[in-house]
Image 1 (cartoon, one colour):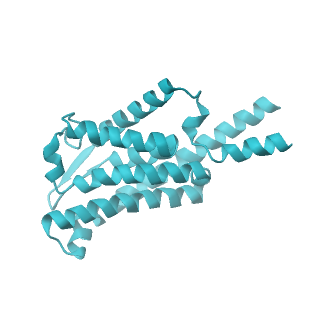
Image 2 (tube, one colour):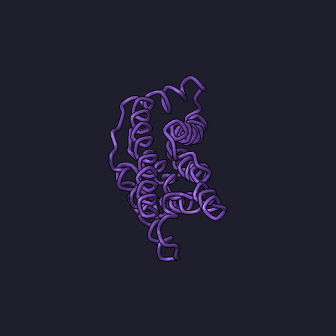
Length: 204
């Protein structure tokens, strides 16, 4: 009973990716796949005529991927995505890349992906991706971080007031991010539920 309790306690500190065999090859593969996934979702891009910030699928990929991979892999995957994009890989929104992006009003969102990847990955390892309500909180925290970096940089770059920053960098995307949040809150706890059911079935 004591060993079982310790194992359950250890599981609560793990991410979904930690259920895979641990190795350097696994780490590199997961980090690389995560970066590629963000790049693919970035191409789901809808420009808006009244703001330089497009609607993209990046946020969904960053948040759900970071939660699944945990602090270390989630942070490194986000860093890899941004880093390779800055050196020229054309996988930012609109198939763009290069150092010129650092001067773009939307660059803050890319920095937000890295920060959100770290925080969401860490909180997921602490169990915030196991239940519906906690996952809602986890995804909300991640979105707030991305919006904070994105809107802050947008305001500085374009010399906007807080009201204009919200109008251009946050408000147009709230409905879409709510849909992404609901998808994530179904996928993450659902994956843990299936894992627990399979594990219990093996133990029986």
